[in-house]
Length: 194
Image 1 (cartoon, rainbow, N blue to C red):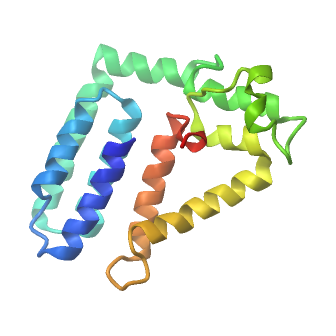
Image 2 (image 1 turned 45 degrees about the vertical axis):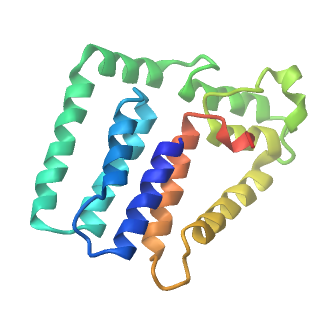
Image 3 (image 1 turned 90 degrees about the vertical axis):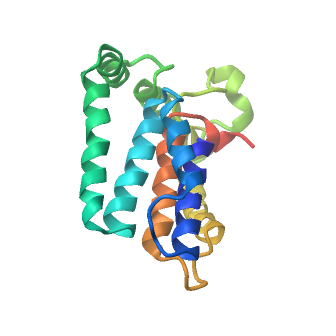
């Protein structure tokens, strides 16, 4: 979670403070660190960040080479026994402890409490104190209206966090960090933790 958020912030800081000569040392270290986590959602977030960086921030001819080099490890991961099995199992697993299954589980728990949710402290009744899907967990705990407000406030907080409005950061960079936050929240219950 924090590695990819730090990567976005590092890239945006480096881009706004220097002549853009590529990723700085900290960003490179964060990319390497992300790849050592063996986290599928971490890989997805890192890949998204790097593709964004090389297509929208650092637009140079050599960026095409970097994007091509990014695709190779992804293909290797997907074609490996570990990668293919992990993706197939995760997408087909309907158990409440799986990331995709948690969405269906949360929806069934939420059907009687669409507007007010089941409440944060009711987890002993529903067995949902920890969830592999933080995005739908917000809707379960707080209900649809409050969850929508939460995600709007998260977007506004993202704007403040990266300094949108001071002339250095564009709205597209706000969306970059916001989407990364949503990607990493999909695989964790960070939306309900301090």
